[in-house]
Length: 188
Ligand SMILES: Nc1nc2c(c(=O)[nH]1)N[C@H]1C(S)=C(S)[C@@H](COP(=O)(O)O)O[C@H]1N2
Ligand SMILES: [Mo]
Image 1 (cartoon, helix red, strand yellow):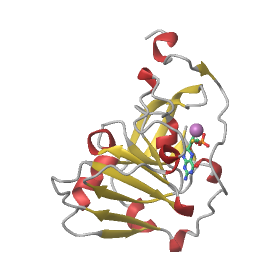
Image 2: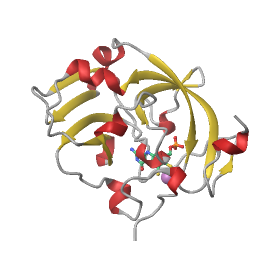
Image 3: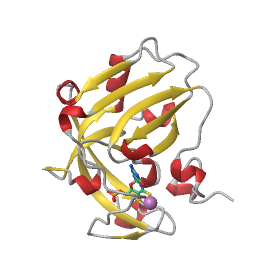
Image 4: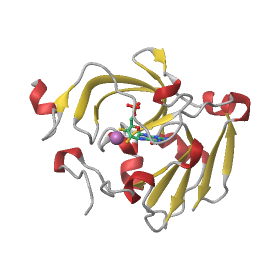
């Protein structure tokens, strides 16, 4: 595929990797870290870091598209596919949306269908190396089909809900959905 065919409208390419987030970098004490599956599931579940690390792992190559207009091609992410969540909990049919929770109170929301897309994963490594804390270690979501603000850093859990609840950036002017190919950048 030609490089430009991969660049959504209004985006430009970058080779470096900017660090962007609201508030403080979240330093995680691994023995205290937990991953919680809550909301519309048959039984809520809590995993320790060791338990999460023992889940089947996957690699995904994808492009980053940040709403501030930079894109970065060919990121090799390694981690746990979001589909593994389905093996850990029975998700009720009423669950239409997922709220991703992150350390420090950050949240973001996406439809379950997009959350379970094949290229969507919880990553802890990038381009063959352990991810920097500034980029979300020990765990970040990577949802390549949506603008990068949906890819929450320092993830601590997922909550399945029936009614869509706008997350942090979605409450602060960003589009609720965020498809880069439709330029769903800001709400108004
Ligand atoms: N926990 C948390 N995750 C976050 C954010 C944040 O403020 N807090 N910002 C998002 C935004 S707006 C962007 S552009 C990307 C940036 O990720 P990077 O710093 O690894 O490039 O993280 C996303 N994930
Ligand atoms: Mo962003």
